[in-house]
Image (cartoon, rainbow, N blue to C red; front, top):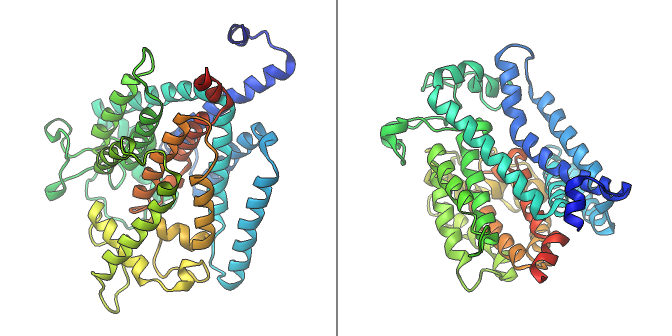
Amino acid sequence: MTTSVIQTGFLPGAAQRVHARAGVGVWLVVLSAMFNLIMCFINTHGWLRVNATQLAVIELLIMMVGMLAVRRAVNARVVIITALVIGYMVGAKLINPGLSFKFVHDLAIIWIFFELGKMGGMEQAQIALRYMVFLILACALVEFLFPVQYGQQFNIWQYYVQKGGLSADTVNYSNTTSFVSGSRSGSNARTYFPSIFGGRRIASIFLEPVSIGNVAGIIFCWCLATSRNYKNEREIGLYLAVAAFIVLGDSRFATMFCLVVTLVRFSPFRESAIITFLMPFFVMIALTLMGSLHEIPGWLPRITHDDFSGRLLFSGQLLDYWGLSHWFALSPSPVYTADTGYAYVSNSVGLIFASVLWFLFSFSRSHSNAQRLMRTCLAVYFVTSLSIGAGIFTIKTASLLWFLYGATASEMENRRVKN
């Protein structure tokens, strides 16, 4: 009865408003993924000269709408955690004036979209996935079939230069309008179907190929956590979409991640909160040890090979190079940290507070098997992704990730599992 009432729209005023707020989450997830493509189109046609400030304003507007929708979810725990994190960062900034408060923005994205997903439930999550998969595949098809025309409409290289993502003096070796990682050549040729794609990597709505691989990993986590061997619950279409995204973006990271997370999903530790909590510390120790074995005295760590192994080595060398003050965000890192996630987190909020936040995630109350499995799968995603970058915090993929995880924690999902 309730479902039919919702579908027909004959709801009491309060219930109608709740249902409307739940639907807002889907559109915010889609807009978070799409707004860079839209702004790139506008910039390419000269209607507006896009810069980083304008994009930051758009992100804040998305977050404000989301915050308005979930404002009633604010409780004492949220206020206390926020106050403690900001308080520590303010204190650290008195010692380390170069400290950025961007991490507060990253945490806000996490909480807002988690609550939006929790409010929307599994039904809204499935709707968001259908929209996202359709948009990604449709845009990817146009990009693949009409590369010249696509480049004329979306000058991605110029867009990233103007918003500060690329230096103006960066050499465009591919001589295209794609992002710097939009093609592979020579010894770093494509892994999947080079005879069909040549050296091109398809980025679709995300503009850079790494993001389509990250979304493949996120959706794969959802499939592993929620799919069941029952009619209409096998998620075959989503599994196929994941494979398509990996091939389109030629994502070696997503390939490796899917293999690793599958092993974890079917291991005895798949629902262990303790293992989830310990994972990043094991990886950080391993990276630091690797970095110590490749020390070069008097040499600042830098990326010598911009591939998976090169970024792993850079992460390890930077963590090994650091002193205690860098680990606790009390002094600025001598090297840019956005290309190594563990360094970014530790140098933004400090290792202690980062550990506390990870503890809260690892031991968060789970009311369903899907939520526990999703938490473990996402933990593997975080642990592996942070080894080579800080891309897990970008709103264009983080919005979908936390929306899906929130959906597994929704009361509607808990009732479905119990029934």
